[in-house]
Image (tube, rainbow, N blue to C red):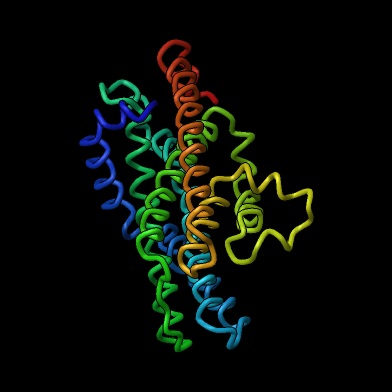
Length: 265
């Protein structure tokens, strides 16, 4: 799985993304994950902030949207292959000419894009219910940060999905992985408030760099050099995760096509 392969299979990715959106647009669990839960988090955080001003409110808007992105990635994208196995269609997908990694990439693209709705809903909540006048301080840099965030999250999802299929014991920790990442990535408060030993863990998480970039560009709290560094870290992790995911997908295909043991994992 590499960027060249994604370019060659872009049409297949878009078709898969469209079909995934059609299937999930009325799914109650997904709607709760990308809309209701981030909305509740934003509501509580904005209420706790009181009248600390639009900059703090924007921090909450971006952070609550990030919680929706991560929850969707963990539960929806993480189970994107398992859903096919439970439906009995995994063997068919493994046998088609289009790479399974490309299909999963399209699924992840749809899920992550759909999750961006939570950020819009949080913005409307802050503007209408709490009376904040919100604006993005660096709109161009924010848009680029958002684009790189989507790529980084999709790349991370390409690792989670095959891991959950080949190692069910890892999936048992799925629920426990949600809130620690909220905390370690600094979605709703800076990681500087955490113990010093946890900081290296934050540096290894792409959502951390995405949160730094989005928070910094939305509130104007980061200079251009800092933002460029955040972009570079997201791009670096995206490439690393794409390379790792390629190895994982090859191993999974061996289990499916050669060993015929994938459905027994």
